[in-house]
Image (tube, one colour):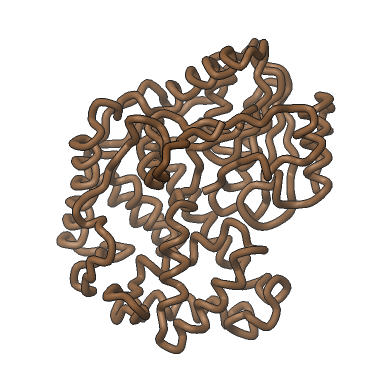
Length: 419
């Protein structure tokens, strides 16, 4: 999950703007905070492999168990946060964003949104096109995709990202790579998925074991910032090959807040206040918040069979990475219905918007940035030819200069611009 903060902005940008952020409704420091925890979420439950749901449920019994687990999560959300559930979608967040703009005394909004923040920025642009000054949408989500298209696209992107890891590991982490060739890395990852599905690996100091779900979390969480995360992933894979799941379990545990199975961040930046200054740090409910927004913003079918059909296709296309994206949507089956539908952008009167897309982005596929830029009136696309999730604040000077030039001076980005 990508969260934009003041440290993501350059000195030039900070010299021209006050950086203000906020927690959307139900997120982290907001009150009331969204809570979808179930008894199964308590820490260190133990849990042998018999209690673990497979990444790709094949049999009727496995699929019924996956459905029951998803329904249990949805029921927990309803029981703990039912009053706010219908009101934590992006349409409401966009209206709140405009209230924040007005409260700050700005006639027009200057906004940078990463990941999920691009969808929030898009919906704001549709609701308040005349109140936008400059919008940067980095790591774009395509509002025209329905739930199944999003799931299939997301699975393919994570599968590609793991292939990119295999192809580029030696360049980035050098001797720490877990194999000497890209094919060797792919084989190791595939073998570990098969191995942990049968016999989860021990984790030092814990009664838990590294099963295929934890392995999947560790691998996918490591695709967001390769320059930072691939070293630890490589070391974890090497240890797992020797039978020790500790390092990968640590990545999975610390990566939960990064992932959307998607990965999108309900905390976006605009003129980005850190809410939640209470004495005790709020629980990280980013996964709950992302699930809530996803379920409300994109209608999902009630019939379980619709998910199984997409699940089979996703697995054929992208293996476990595809299957997991579909399973993540199962919870939405019994969710309240929000006002938004998949649609192409309609924002007459909107000034030029800068969309930034990373060619090797796993969480928000590059083609989504291409599509969004084409839908926005006067949309400009800046392509970062690189790996990882989003670009501004973590890529190179070319991206930085282009984004800062647009934010500060409204300098346009030329068609076909790339870094």
